Image 1 (cartoon, rainbow, N blue to C red):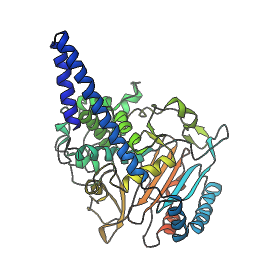
Image 2 (image 1 turned 30 degrees about the vertical axis):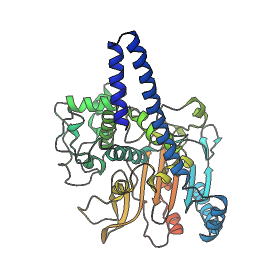
Image 3 (image 1 turned 90 degrees about the vertical axis):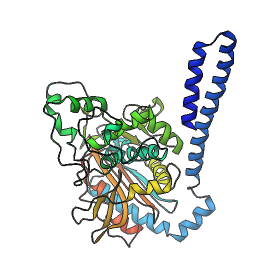
Image 4 (image 1 turned 180 degrees about the vertical axis):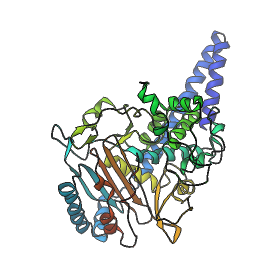
Length: 421
C-alpha cells in the first residue's frame, strides 16, 4: 500500500503541472486526499506497532503475581549487590536495567554524567550505544526485506553500483562474513592529511576511488571477521532503498513506532533532550569528537536504559518484523571453528560449543569514544540486561553473575567479547 501511495501521489503531482485551472483544482483536491490518507496510513502503522509494544508490559495485578512467581525481591537484592560492587570496586559509571518476564527487577545509576564536574547520573541519562547500534541497523534491513524492498541474497551492487568489492551479499554484511577491509584502519592517511570528518558517503567514495584498492581480509562468506565496514555499507543500502537518510529511517520506522522517545542518531539530539545527553570519558578526561563520529550504521545511536527495554520488547515479539524473519537474526552463521561465540544478523550469540546451533542467549557489546555498552537478552527465558556507561570500563561486559541469577541453566561468559566499537 505504501508503494501505491507513492506511485499515485507522484502521478497526481505530474498531472497537476499539466492541468488547466479546473483540472488543477480537481487534481489538487485529489492529491490532498491521497496524501492525507497515506499519511494517516503511516500513522496507523506506527500506532499499531506502539500498541503491540505496550501489550508486552504487564498490568499492575499481572506484575504483582509475576514478581512473586519469579522471586523478584530476592533477585533485586542480589542484583543491587552485584552492581554496587561494580561501582565501588571496579569503577563502573553508568546506568543499568534488568527485567524478566515483564518485571523490572532492577534499575539504577552510578557515578556521574560529567565526572569532571561531578554531575550525578540518573537512569534518564542518554548514552552512546557504540556497536549495540548494529542491532538497529540489522533490524532496519530486515524491515526492508519484510516489505520485499530488498533481498538478503542480493549482491551489494544491486543497490550501490559503484561499490568496488564484488561477490558480497547483503547477508554476508549482516553476519560479518564479507571479508571486507575495516574502514577504521584503511584511510589513516586521510586523517593525517587533515581531511574533513567523513560521512558514510565519503567512506564509500574513498573506497571506490582508492588506488590501490584496500585489500580484503578474505573472500566473501569464507569466514567470520567482525568488521565495522559491513554495517556502514548496510546503512548506505538502507538509505538507497528507502529514500530516507539512515537517521530518518530509524526515527520513523523504529524509534517513533516503538516509543523510544529518548533515542536518536549522533548529533540529531532534540533540544529538549540535550541536558540528558552524556559525553564519553576515559577516566576523568572528556573525549572530544572523533574523526569517524559522523559515520553511522556501525555505531552512533544514543539511548537510555528504559528505551532499550522497549527495544527488547520489540525484539522479543513480532511487532516490527514478522517472527520468522526476525528469527533469522538469531541463527548462528559461522562454524569454521568450535566456539561458544557466534554471530547471526547484527547480533552476537552465545551457543553450546559442542552443538553451535544450540542458542543460549543473544547479546551485543560495544565501546567507542569513552562509552561502553552491553545488551544481553534471552527471548526464550524472557530476560534482558542493559548496561550503559559513559566511562570506558571492562566491568560493563562482565555479567556472568547476572545471567546465572536469571537463568541457572545456561553457561555464560561474555568477558572476552569486548567489541572494537
